Image (cartoon, rainbow, N blue to C red; front, top):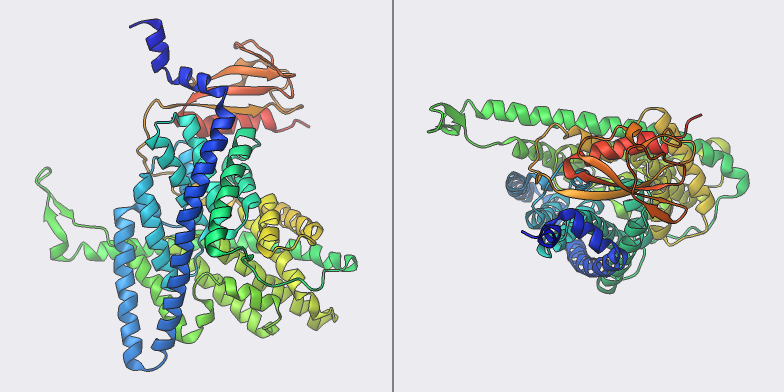
Length: 552
């Protein structure tokens, strides 16, 4: 075989040849992915609206008598069976979907894009329709990422490009879900990649904008939260906003720990159900390969869903306002519909029910439910100031908006995304100063308390699983050596990269050269690393520690 043929089959050669037109190709492909994602998410949102309507009618019907209540119970049982079957067929459709996307971008997963896409849409619509307090944003991000992956696999793109296209789809999914193209773009930079990349920025922006355009054309252009902030918070009251930031930082810590405990609880429920089922004679069968009796089937998903949907069924009669995502609650709270006592009860019940809903592993996200919890917290805080200090209650909408952004920052550890997201979802750009201040304080408090970002926490929780990752797939990542970092002034060989990783290019003062192990890096250098997919997580951790943390 000639050198030219060998070069043509090389993944490195393909990466390098495509690099010259990479940015423009990504923008074009991002638009295609954005349009496709916009269409799918618009259908998804329509299904969720339909599911909400069906649930509301079922709740009203169940409250008319004993017979209707029993029929509603049978409907909930049917949902347990159908959603559980979906989770058994496609385990990657569980939960939010964002941790799965992050894990795949780090080389820890290889999801079946078509199976996940279909399962997520159906499973999430049924879960929210059944009353579980879950959201559409995480599923929309995973759906969009699978659209990007499907495009990449169908067109036989190399791994580097596949990762970028998945990011395009993820940003497009968030954009179409909330009508927030800027937040979709920033989320990919701040949460999925956690560094600035012009390729990710431009391609994801193109995907997010085109996705939002398509979804808005079908669904409409009204902001997700339809209330208006008639009275902005005066500067003299910003001290109260700063205190709110501290409270939200503490509350964010509580939320993340509660999510973890709820998952532990539901895992025990699933384990206990499987242990009990193993005692049933009909659940065991002889394995012809081993000659031993094996347990037939896993009923843990059904048991978890049964507990969660039973809680939802109780809320049908006891407190139906807590059912579903709850975005309509935000408007009512901001308009002052609830007194302090009602808000405190709502906060307690919604907090427990939303964390329990996520613990069931049913398809659905936590973005929107945590924003609702933030809104309720802001409403409680405003009413307390009104009752204790005489602060005018007309500022409740302002406190609701600040609390949503701060709570998001404390839990997700993505303050910029939170500020932009809330701004786009409310359509109000006059509260940026307060949003930034509260989000920053909440983020710092949460981080200083040792709170792990929620999606990192969820991804690490499942890190013990074994995933089917294609071997020896290669990728190229680029990053910056920060001035004053550990590697500023040190040789490349001192970085400690794994054997499967190699720095193939250094760009210094707009001049590119090929380095060797003795090349001394300088602050401001842009490095390009060629690596195996299975080394992605380790290499990105090394770069974060050695090239980005500034020495004091």
